[in-house]
Each structure stands twice: as C-alpha cells, then as structure tokens.
Length: 375
Image (cartoon, rainbow, N blue to C red):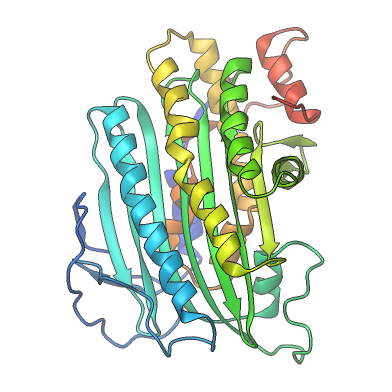
C-alpha cells in the first residue's frame, strides 16, 4: 500500500536527541544587511546559536579561529552572500507566489549564518539556501566525515585531540512540486584547520524523477563549460566523482543523475580554485532555472507523483545516512533546522517496490544503477 509520509515526525525525533535550542527570529525576505546586535555569551553546542534580527556585514572576524588566510575567508563569505541573494531572487521569480523566510544567527565563539527557506509555493514545495560561517574545534572523526575518505587532515595530532577549524559555505536544495521538474542541490565550501591546512569543496547535482535527455544535456553541458574554462580535466574527473559520491550504498543506486562534485581541492593556488568555485556557484541559475521553467506546468498523473515521492524517500536516505555535510553538522553541534533543511516536506516508502521492466520508472532506476554520460 502506498503511503505518503510527512517528515515532521522524523525531524522531531532527530531534534529530541539534542538539547533544546532557541528559536530564531523570523522575518520577511530582505536583501540588505545592517549592523548586528551583540550575541549573548553561550557555550559551543546545539544551543549555541543566538538569533539576531539582522546579520552583520561580515561574519568573518580577524583573530577568530585558527591562524590562516583571513582575506580568503572574507572573500569566500562575500561570494556566498552575493550568490545567496542572486539565487533566492531567481527562485522566487520562477515560483511567482511564495517568498523566502530569512533566519539569522550568530555564535559567541565566532561565526553564524543565514537561512532562507521557501515552503508551499506554487512551483516549489520547498526550497532553501543556507549560508554558514563556523569557527570552533571538532573531533577528528568529524574532520574525517567532512573530507574525502582516506585523506588525513589530522596527521600528527594525538588521539582524541580536537582540531581547530574554520569553515564557510553556501548550500541549497530545491524540491519542486511537479514530478517533471527535478530536485537540485549545490554546496560550495572553504575549510581551514590548524597548521595552515586549507581546501575547497563543493558541486552541483540534479535529481529528477524521470529522464529527459535534453534537460540532462543542458545541465551537464553548463557545468562542462564552467569546468573547461578552468581545467579541461575537471569535468570528466568531477562528473565521475559525483557518480561515486551520491551513491546510496544500501540500495546500490545513486540518488539522482549526478553533476559535478569535488573535495579536498588544494593542488593549485587558492585564488585559482576560488575563481573556479565562484563561476560554478554563479552558474546554478543558468543550469537549473530553464529546466524548471520548461516543466513547471507539465501535466502529470497520480502514479507519476507517487514515483516522485518514492524517489524523495531515497533522497532522505542518502542525506541522513551518507551526506558529508549532514554528518559534519551533526558532529560539530550545527544548527539543526539548517542541517535538516535539505529534506523534502513529504516522501514515501513502499515495501519492496520494483518498477515494471521497460517503464519510464524502470528506465530511470537503470540510470541510477549504471552511470551514463549525458553530453
């Protein structure tokens, strides 16, 4: 029996395992920042996020966190803020009805963030774009969760010793209503740890419910052009990396149809990698917007909606079990509402579901089991 399941219960269970936290102040979507109020002294942890009505001009403060490249920290934050404004404006325009709710917060130890979330729109069931700037120290296992498997960023540290770090990133997930419109996710981030270690990571990927060859050629083609502008080896390398990363191992299938993904990137000058990250992040709207505009009013059946909900169940499974950002946030006392923002409002799980061979659903599942080239 097909059953539509609200994720409110799942989220409430996750929150119940952490101490209570202050609810952030909520206000209508605004684009201009202003001076911030001082945050009260709090301890690092789940309740360390203090709501503010306006975010400061910068959450990067010289002297906070481990010694490192403060100009790069500030430049990366500025890039993320500008992209957050551009992307949320574009998604709001595509939706035509709903607006983004904005929550801002700081931590006494340094850093903070801004979440912009839209729910129950005409086109988007849920969409969110989160900015975070984080200073602190983390267990070595959290650092391992935040980086590519096998990369030892804590080399030389004593067992159990915590790792001072700085992290800045912008992340997003868009869940449209229409099953002919794909879900889209991106995350671009910059990390520093004690001892001058730094790296960039990120990517943009797409998760449709049905295969549309033209859409996939547009999405992947957009990011191939971005990659080729910086290094012709990037697209084949990062496309294959995405195909490996977004695997739901217990299902032996991918979450969606890929895109680009990279991590622990520090093999060239940081300003060079910054420019690549900036162009990749700046291409989100061009890669995704036309696909949603094309399909937002497509007719669909109840069966097609049910299939979309089943695929969203797979999305939930990946995010809660395997996603590197989710694991990192949970291990470092991140803001729970922001961490779980990526989950759809509804999804479904059907016992032993097996699409009929030759159907469009079966064809999509084959693409999730056997990676394909789209351009």
